[in-house]
Image (cartoon, rainbow, N blue to C red; front, top):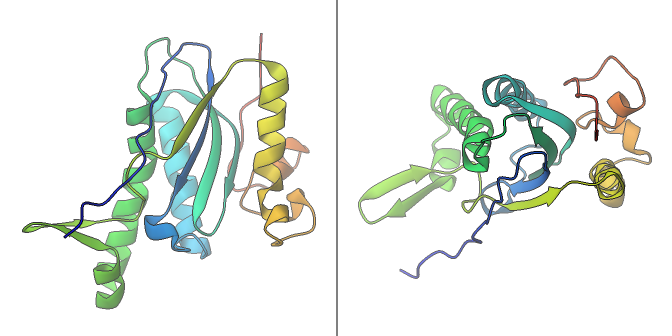
Length: 186
């Protein structure tokens, strides 16, 4: 069996830097196309924010991937731990849901084999894309890019029409799935 190739993510854990992160569902399947799975992500983001002490500046949950802009508040942090705090609970919730419903076809579809070992995969391995940001203009550009994602895909006309992003929160709307933190570049 050919060895599976995945991107190596090089994280630079630099105090004061924001991180623009993108990661995808297993084999780019639209596993985030239902409100149920999007709620799992929102819950995991809120818990990750608290447990890892990060500010969430912007996000969008697309059907098969997520864009996220965060600022770790600790001087010493590890992006791998932050990502694990976000991704692992979503994967566990998905597996639990599929097991409770006896969804064998989906369980098989999301399970890989490595020799005799089987691994459930909700997320694509390899960590995804991680870019450090530290100045105002690139951060503003990334926020705009994140919010425009559903528009570019033709899912909505305006960024604020997509319920599963922080676009409405940036416009001051309080009725959003996840509150965002104030972008402060001082």
